[in-house]
Length: 85
Image (cartoon, rainbow, N blue to C red; front, top):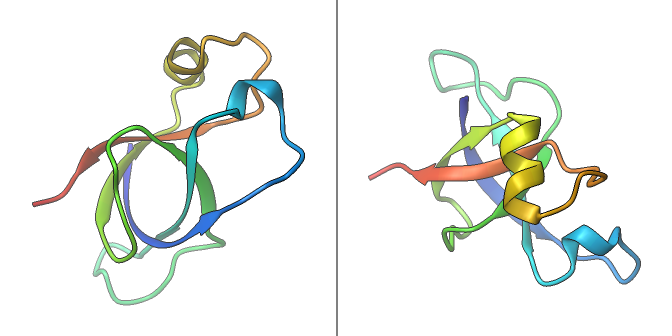
């Protein structure tokens, strides 16, 4: 699990069938001090209604994501599992 900040949304006209109907967010991870970006942003499936600027808790558990999307072949790795208050 990692904490990141939502920096945008992703839209696609052509996508894997498992992504139909799901909101996709662009999330930036930060270093431990929370000051500098840590790597490239990632795309995550959102089930909780997060928006721009929200801090989210992401899971990279592939099995959990496959179960959530009801697809054994989904290309998704990250999903939003919590919002930071």
